Length: 210
Picture 1 (tube, one colour):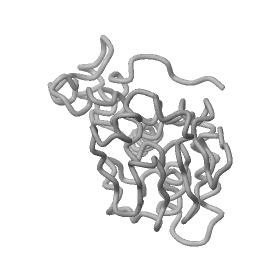
Picture 2 (cartoon, helix red, strand yellow):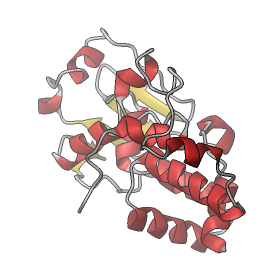
Picture 3 (spheres, helix red, strand yellow):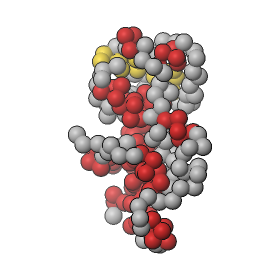
């Protein structure tokens, strides 16, 4: 399946917000957003001055959220349609499904510095769910499913340092993670407030419901 392979900092510049796609660079003063970088492209000034229509505002929110999780349009829309079919508030259901992706959980554990790296770990069969190998990044993790890094994979750079306690990881309140054993689980599904995303998901719902 095709995937964006260009400069990820361009994506943040286009959306004028940090999408945390570049690992450590996003948390340093090298981040283009921190430097106040302009929109990419030779017509950036014209684009910046243009007033967005209602459709344009909704489109940009959808693009932000899609790029934040690193999904292609078809994957993103399919997940939205699944959220629509569930009982409850569509926007909240959608965020929950995005967060429950296996690659996202690995990233949230702090094992990797970006979702792209987390996706690679899953694809290369370094991750187990309930003791079984799962190499599907979109796999939906449930509450109390045990996610762990294979023992043989513990020597990978960064993962080894986390295991040895040389790198401290910050874990969201809705997750539980044992850094020494590289093992964790979801203890509850996160609320919108706990996620603190740079996106208004209601506008995404409006975009697809138009």
